[in-house]
Length: 170
Image (cartoon, rainbow, N blue to C red; front, top):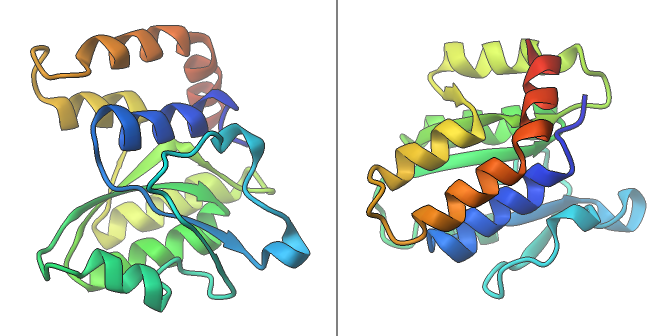
């Protein structure tokens, strides 16, 4: 089960451009496994892609950026493989005291049966497993928020793919 092709770009746009939330991206041994999927582009200008060999995305460079002000943060995770890289990143963030939201319709695996197992494990470990739409509206909190109309339009535009993705999760 792969997240719909709409979701990577939707979440990237919402995070970086509309809500002005810092966004981090990693690749796993890109020379061997390839670059980020085209659906993630265009990335917001301030997003630097970091290549890694660790399964967790908490490589030194990103760890330093995340901990610049030493405050605990809320972090939303999307990506592949849900049972490896997403899971290990989630566990590292939780161990460091951060609040972690795993966007269920924004994670995938080459083996779709891994996804619900990984989501349940992350939930048991303390992560909040939610949907992209629910998370976006929670972050906004108010229909008067700047960017609300843009986000509502994106949600409406991706309604069909959202339904298909969530059906495969359930």
